[in-house]
Length: 407
Ligand code: PMP
Image 1 (cartoon, rainbow, N blue to C red):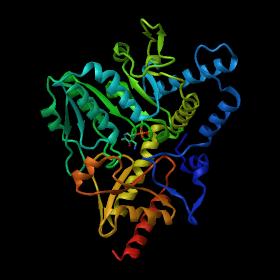
Image 2: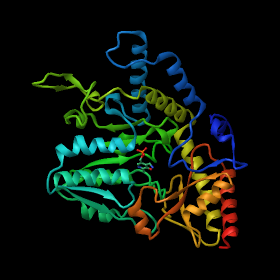
Image 3: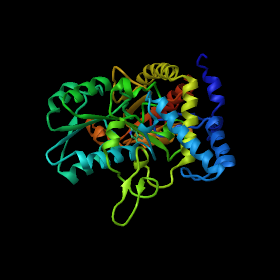
Image 4: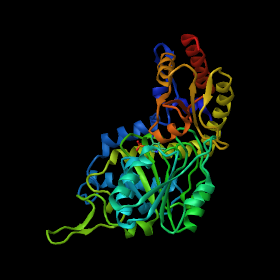
């Protein structure tokens, strides 16, 4: 099936509305993405027909829910190129996945004097959990810098990696710069130094084919809501042999083999990491979203979005006073910029009046803002349903802003 954006747009009811009397151009996909009818219907169907408590079910609805939940796990595994569904842990999203690794793996595998490596372009959710871990165990956080174009300085990574490095945690795609990082190369270098690699895939899965075996990483985290699924669901993929060796991070129902006041023993994986009643409906929605993406074709989605970025980039550059933040050679789906004389938040507000939804702020990447010497940027981020018309509306809105501000 060829990629037909008009047909795709038909699947997303929310896109067909006016905002402030203008057709909506939704360009805030890096923050959260919209949901196709197929996902909304799957949720409705689940709650209308199947909803029950999962695992140890003695009634039909519980059994159906368990089947749906475990089926969703298999779908997540397949969409990441993993062969074993037991390598998938359901979580609330990328943030929780990283906190899980920092707690379950970090607290038991990282000791005083060890080092953890992140990069200058990480989202706060791939910074703060490691700072908390370092504070708790006495480890040291090292940071790989970026160049002016917004690309990682891999020679600096080589200089940082050493016998004490336990983990490299890196984003697949920067949510500010759009940089697509050379994950496989990073993995090779980290593994050669004896370190594991966690990939923050929040901006990866929605925009391109992802294959964890090809990437070679040890952990891969992503959020459902950015990949056309509901909020409150996401997944951590981890190599089974790593998961098997770890103790739990949260205690409660569902994560034990047996409990007594004298001694409690743990369930196998992944249940050991899923304490409490899970977000079954969310998992059903996530599976429907990943199936939707699979049908659209992740490779075709990537090509479509790259073409949009290539269409948008020169048009933005041609706007007097506009400066793109980050110009990486390999860019996926995100453009950030600032404009002389107009604060990013004012720009965002004016664009909203034109029906154009963008994000303005630090994008939970304050160290990166500091690196570029800006307090905030405007960020336009694309998804499979965006069109050249959306880009044209953005560019027209920016020209209108210049006139309003006399910039
Ligand atoms: N990492 C990156 C690169 C992100 O863009 C985001 C969301 N903006 C996150 C992590 C956090 O995702 P969530 O809030 O869904 O946990």
